[in-house]
Image (tube, rainbow over all chains, first blue to last red; front, side):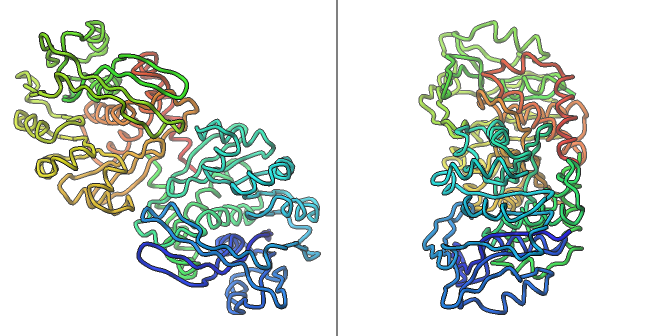
Length: 300
Length: 300
């Protein structure tokens, strides 16, 4: 099954304690789509400006990522983000955000995309995420990501969204903010009671937790010794997960768990270099090989 | 095999965001010993004062914990600690420490204990830990715990200790402090290169990481929804682990991994109430049942 993703497409400038990169390919929909492309065809909807390097489109197209839905705004500038990671590589400071064309992002789904069965609403305004949902007819599985900003300023629309999606992905601090609960286990279930059938809490280097009606589990991150740039880790996690689900055309508990494991593995590669540089260099066989190692690691 | 533990025995006063307890049974050797007692006989060496309530000794004795080595100092006062947990239940502030009789702790092992095959040096001065090792003849497995204080003020003795033990248990912040490496994967291996055959980094609610010469793995914490008091979590983790190893009289990689899983499970019970209150109420069967659930949780 093809997989639809709607979200940000960006040019990122990233500083780590030892290195920096300027205007590299980024954005949540991009990290998501590239990660998912190991498993299935991806339909990407986003917006960029005139400054968008066409080689980025070519890179995505070469990976079975359909960019028909990537609008290029004449005279516009692409969303830019500049961030700096602390020595622990987990905490980061946003130095600059220029939303540019993303500020007025009003996604219009191409006709074919409206019948998508697997849909991911990457981090963005819940108002816009709801508009996307209004255009999709009869999806099988809709999963959304969100962030602290929307919990703070668009809580009503977020509440509406939560009642219309099947799964929500958010990070630990956001789950605590949304529920007021400091223990992630009750927090995860409280988020689930707001609407989604399942909730996944991302804990960065500490892995992810899954909350379903009948299941609660935690999966650690694969312990990679090489963390070069964590940007996009959460998006590539979601991309690996949704890509696998769409490829299987299933989301029963067993498939979901396998999908979370794939998400963890793809994310562990993503952080091993800047932008998509590490993911560009690996094959599906390498993903499967690390997955097998990960499974072995967790069996006792 | 009986298991020897040498370390602190204390009366703790604990404040959490919602509750408090005064002068409850605590100390690293106590949490360790009680956790280990689900698996094997424990020989406890420590020191207390005249104020030590005899019912605590009775409680330990009832669990196959031999307290022949628990010295009661006439006129002395027991080590007391007072701490306060932040709302996240992970960060804590030490409000008061009165070392009392523990300040001059000079452990003398009873003759029978000197032939112990399984030895745990609970958190304490490396100088004292070395003195204990000098009294033990031909142990099979020696594991030690340490903390930031000793890394800062007794680094030379800690370096000596690291070359004489088989395994070291420490937490994430301590591993970073000891090695200067912010990524726990290289940090764990760097600690191992200082001497021990294996290193275990405890990450609190995020579980534990194992570093051997040929193996690196991570085990998440069991996701308990009820964290009442995290005091002693790390010690009960180590106790569950060492108790299982001593019971098996083995420490090959497979047994070690199973032991880490048992440690995680016992620790997950320990945090569900103050002091030993939760562990006092459960049976080995309940430990095994949660272990089975944990194994299922990690298989995909």
